[in-house]
Length: 159
Image 1 (cartoon, rainbow, N blue to C red):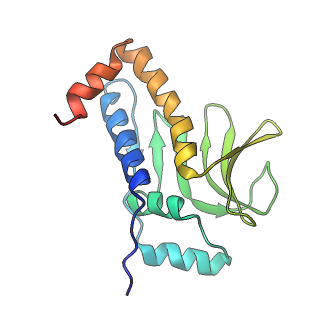
Image 2: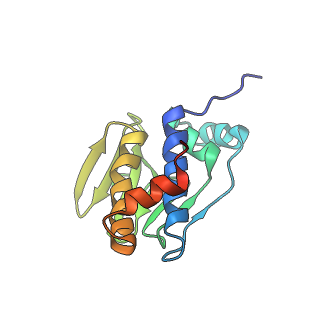
């Protein structure tokens, strides 16, 4: 059996998200589900006749779902179709505070968001995570002040 390797950039993003949520835990709650087994992901792909992008699979291997900053951002187990976008999509989450859906094109595998009739395409899942991390950073500034980065570094950075 071939061992699946988690993408290093996604692991770094995951760690950053968890750290930011821990930093803000006094002010807002977040939750990360257990990691998915690769067999569960592969069975989902087989059942739905689709291959998920490598980076998104890596995220699922770290957490099946995540509810971030009081549920403002949510990543979910993949679901086929969408109520607002075309039906050839895979729903992977939402920016609940904005009503924005986070999607994967079933045909191309591209990551994009759909909000208010508009789509925004991302380079990859890492790019999506980078864009969404801005909300966590805004929250950190709101709750901890402009020096939140120093607080983060002191708490999480090693030497």
